[in-house]
Image (cartoon, rainbow, N blue to C red; front, side, top):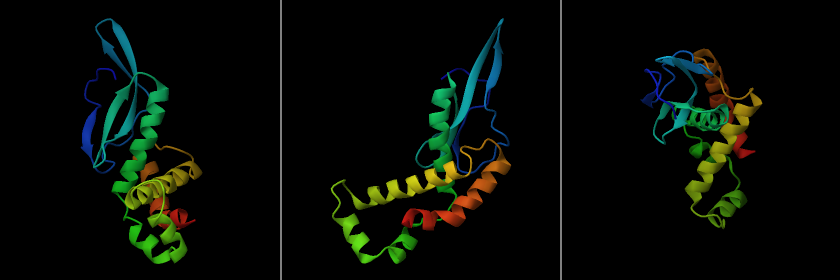
Length: 146
């Protein structure tokens, strides 16, 4: 990461920062430093951090956006419990991959990823986030069940 003059934030639970620039330039003495800001997943919140290159930014932004969406929608676990057939539930409980809740969390994350991708990829504005949030909120339950 690179040094910044105030764009970096942490402990965010909602999109409260207007537009997130896709690149950021700052002057340090006689030098200009270019950085790429992105949302970063911090499990129970997100942060805005600056990255040295757009590839790191892209990877972090996807994960951070997914986390911010998940923090702002109801968990689909109850819906999954009601809608999954018993055969699928048994498959979850006897899966070779580890704990059931971790597998369900992975399925939910994959559902969010699918919806982000289907709606054009990461968003950089508050309005874009609001529209994507509404789509994910409305479609995540059925996407995860499918």
